[in-house]
Length: 227
Image 1 (cartoon, rainbow, N blue to C red):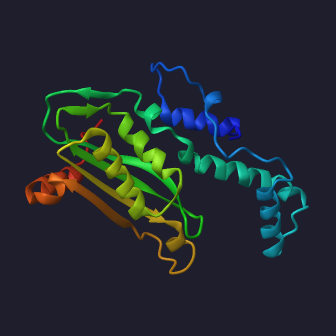
Image 2: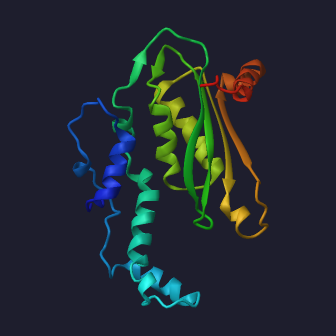
Image 3: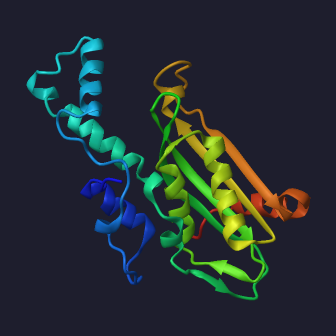
């Protein structure tokens, strides 16, 4: 495998680690297949062809650097493919006899719709009921980020976050709700600004017990205390 571009390696490392965490690996050790191929690579050539197809002149000054910028942008926005889940967790799963609901709300994210390669963005809320094991608070937004920085559909993103926590923590239940605006519905097609899509994934007690699911949704309605 080839080495990832420096800016993408740095982003992958940022998702995987945080200040104060120790680890033998550094960004320069992260490898993948997404290395930039240079000014005449296949991605750059494809962008030039797109520019020409829509009636632009790829050789005009304002567009000369666009193919390289587009390649770098997509490498950055899809850095989640290269995140190592084990490095992301980095041992931050702790034994703790706590069995009440843990909720992390309003996690901002940005992703790319795989159908049109246009952004969709919004907030994720994640909850789980521990079964003797809890995960460090900062890891939950990082899990969302890992899956958001891929070509996605919102339904899959929601399910992946829930299944990851279910697999790694073996909790009594997991609930994930994502609300997002999709530019493919705002800028093209139906062109309806303000449209918001909501998806949910519930596992374990969140699926089988109405009261647990209702408690989760009631947490989402509460606003944080004033600063």
